[in-house]
Length: 450
Image 1 (cartoon, rainbow, N blue to C red):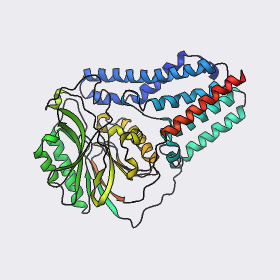
Image 2 (image 1 turned 120 degrees about the horizontal axis):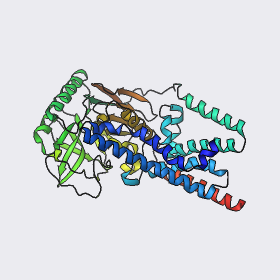
Image 3 (image 1 turned 120 degrees about the vertical axis):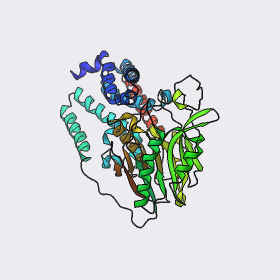
Image 4 (image 1 turned 180 degrees about the vertical axis):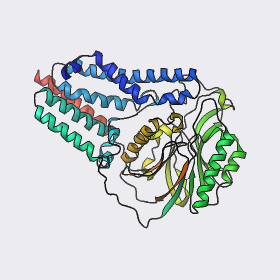
C-alpha cells in the first residue's frame, strides 16, 4: 500500500494541500473581523497559498520520480524534496518559511542543542533523511531494521518530555525589560486609538510603579494603529510615561516621504524618536499587494501598501546593550537576511501583532517558529504581542517567562548582559550544499549502476 501511494501521482497534490490548508487556517481569523466579504477573501487566499505550496511539493516529487522511478533510491530521496520546498519558501514571493520540519522539536531542549550547528533547514534535512531511510529499509525487506529506526525516532521525540537542567546566570549586570500585553484584538473595521493608548498607559504605569529599576518598556507591533510619525502630541504623551535613562519601544505606522512604513519607534522621556526600524520583510497581501504602487494618504483606513525598510543598524539600549530589531514574521526568516549585523549582539527585540489571529493556534505556531531561529543564532528573544504570546526565550530555547494568549498583563525580565558573543552563523548555504551533494551523488550512483 505504501509503494502504491508513492507511485500514484494523483495523491500528492491533495495530500499536501489538505495539510497546508489545515495548518494555515488560522489566517482566516485576521479577515473575519472585516465581515463576510473579508472572510470569503481570507478563505480564498488560504486556498491559493495552500495550493501553491502543495503544487511545489507535487512538482519536486514528480521530478524525482522521473529520474529515480526505476530504483529504490526514490523512497530515500522523495522526503528530501520536502527540504527543497522548505528552503524555496524562504525566497519565493517575499518568503513564507512557515512550519519547517524541525518545528516538531521546538519543545525538545535536547534536540535544540543541535540547531546552532545544523540550522533550521539542516535539521529538517536530517529528519527527512531519517524518514526516507526508514521507508527505504521497509521497501527492500529490511523491516526489522526499519522498525528499530522507527522506535529510535519515537524515543528521540519523547525525550523532549524530559526537562533538561539549565544554568542560571548569577551576579551578572542586568538590563530590566518590561513587556506590556493589553489583550487588545485587532479589527479591519473598528479601532479606537485613544482607548488603546489608555490601556497601554495604565499597564505601563502599573509596571513602573511596581518595579523601580525598569530600563526598557516594550509595547507590541501596531500598538497605535495610526501614522504616529506625524503625531507629536501622542509621542509626547507616550514619552511622558517614562523617566530619565528609560526608553519606550513601540510599534505603529509611519508616513514619510510619501511612503508608509511598519515602524518600530524608540522614544525617550521627551517624546523624541531617538531611533527607529522599518520592517523589511513584508507579508504578501497582508501588508502589500505586488505590482501596485501605493497611493499615499494620511488617512490609513483608506488603504495603502507598506514600503520595505532598509535600515540594518542595531538598537542601542540603556547600559550600552545593543539589540537587533525585528517586526512580526521577520523572526521566522534566516536572521542574516533580516540584519547582517545579527552576530554583533546577543539580543533580539521582536514586536509582533498576533492578535489578528485571535485565540487560534496561529500565535502558538508563530512562537514555535520564532524560537527555532533564535536558538539557531544563539540569541535571547524578547517578543511582545498585544494579546499573546508575549515571551522571553533564552538562547537554548527555554521559554523563561511568558504571558499566555488572551490575557491582559505585563512581565518584567532581568536580561543578563553578556558582552561575549555566542556561536552565531547562518547554516543556509551548508544545508543547500548538503542537499546538492546528496542529489548529485544519487544521480552519479544511478548512472554508474546502469
